[in-house]
Image (cartoon, rainbow, N blue to C red; front, side, top):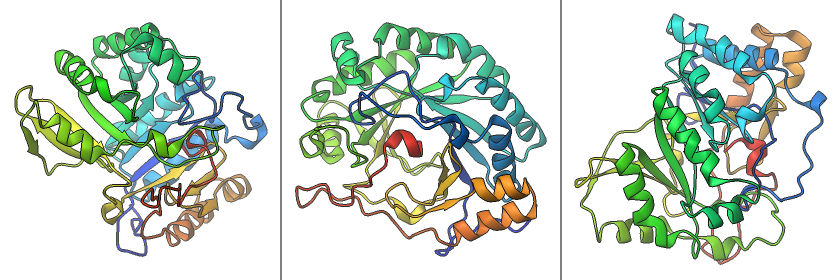
Length: 334
């Protein structure tokens, strides 16, 4: 292997999140507007280009690859990409291939994902109330997602649920979601809502539910044991003594997790974002299309990593959405 990727703050970059599409079959209110204008196809990296880009990063020391969207499984032919990445798992160059999904397509794709070497997945689900689910996703249907969870577990995939903490929406489901996951042997991670993109009159300040409050409420019913383990992402974990399950907290606002950041994000258009909460980005599509995979493309990756900032600027403390970035979460890939 060549010299690994090290950012200006001596953090090794070993984790790449790849958005394979900006399209989604849901329209979650905190992620995108209902009437989205999606990118023209010519701007998107082809599946072959995504393969070449990921292979370049793996050659420079990336060990974990998370596929995101939009909804990654709505991209036409996406399973050929997963199957192509299997070679890196088999060679040992890649330690983990995983994805974050809304679960809508898992009933169809779970067995193929398992066959491609995916071991665990994250499913985003904020409520177990069918009416509330339809309201927050606009286009989603809860029974379809629940069937997807069943299919994923039947295929042997380890499932973790991700829930965005939304004040006045799912506060009353803290224990319901915890118990649902415990009964199915699933872990659960809560995420603070982040100020990403103009969503059309959504009240970001009103949505914000501090995970400090959530954790304190959880501790009223369970014994929380702090864990030191990390899974390569920003979550901090506790174990519930009574159930044995892990509960994660992703807290970009109440706790800045940047000091250990080991990840970068490649968009479906070939832009590399060195930080989710900054506008700094590098165009990797142009060098990839000009030179193909090889030394010139690897040089472009290294030049981008050299620009990685120390941290993000998310802040709600002044009751305004300071640090808001203009792009939608669906464009960057979470």
